[in-house]
Length: 60
Image (cartoon, rainbow, N blue to C red; front, side, top):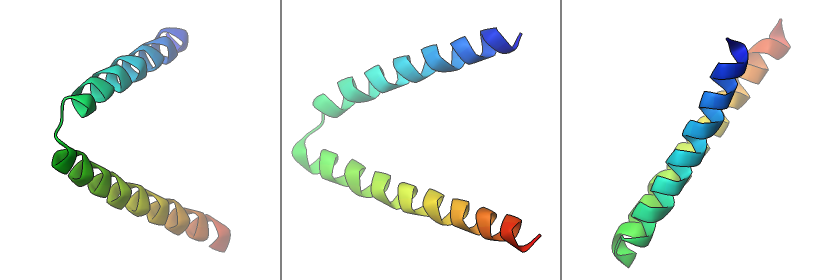
């Protein structure tokens, strides 16, 4: 069961990355800039969440 889950996650990731690259190539330069800004914001938010979780674990 676990092996099928991992292989499904890998396949889904590859399909998602391929679809994202295709969509990105078909965007206008303005849309690309907007997507990059949003992506940067999301990465910063995720990094902050990881930092908070690590600091909570550190306090235990």
